[in-house]
Image (cartoon, rainbow, N blue to C red; front, top):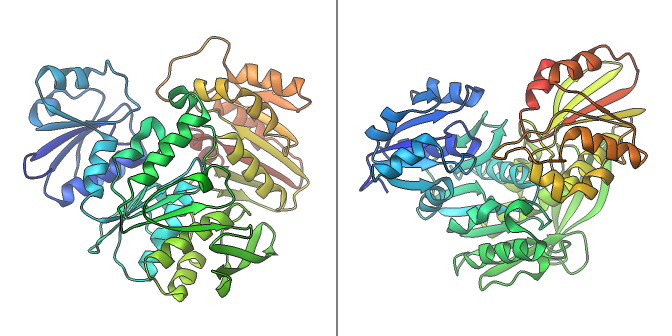
Length: 449
């Protein structure tokens, strides 16, 4: 890419993926300009690194750059994108650029409806501990490196593989990981068959001498067919890699023995909360095995993993109250995070939820009505629209009403400030507030620090 393009302008550079791509492009000598609709911590990180960034439209950057890269979060009538087309600029989607980058490395791509960021983080830390000097592109702030990107001197690139709009089909992967396949992004895929077919194509894009790592316990993932070598992981008999002798060594934290081809090769003590993280750890171990990393380094990499910002992140804790923040926005993720909260042993659990996109709430409505059964109360704030416009009859207020009809105790708050004040003035003892969502609800969480 750098042979023909000397400069690029990135629309939406503050996004978790494009901000990392900006760093990769500058590494190979490309001048990078950027813009976003509002300021953010990520923009400030980039500005400190010396990137030229503007808030809002940036006509001058369109004219200066050889090419324009855009995020799928922008609308098709974005002023800068329209100008770039009018001027005949080369235009790339985020997925296309990440695909071009992936071809230069032994790329490890982590896909799945949920668990991608945590698993990518675990794998990254294994490679760091093993001194493989990896390149890392991750959809969150990995606490071990305090960043979403790392430029290493090694030949490996560890990246998340997002299925939305078939983005991950652009990737050229040496190791492809499929954690799970569930209904999501139905505004694009329409049904589960289309989702499965997309994951099937992703797996088939794996290089012939590479590996597919897949969840043997997931009904759809286990049916994927590809020509490369395969390693399955799970809890059920028949899997290549199995977690056995699972124990809760501390409230919400688990240890287990690791069996590979029926031989015990070691044990793992998970540092992060939640039984669901056993699957993420198994996928990470499988990648380590496929990469011929010594199990001692695999074990140390997982056990020294310090988590991801916004993934079961501790916000505040005292003798009466615990506040946790998590990125969960899909019904299955919500169930898992509530189950983890229940394991912590507090008497009362309140889920504070910001729904993410109107289409997801509409298409998975029944699941959202049912997935909060593990909480004593559900507090809702307005939907985060992301790339979407309002849909008639779809709102957090309506979801609140339907939760109540289903027997759930639920409340609606019209803004973060009212919700924050209610939490601060709450005097219940032995209570957990879990603040969940993939939008800007982190603002509410950090208001409470």
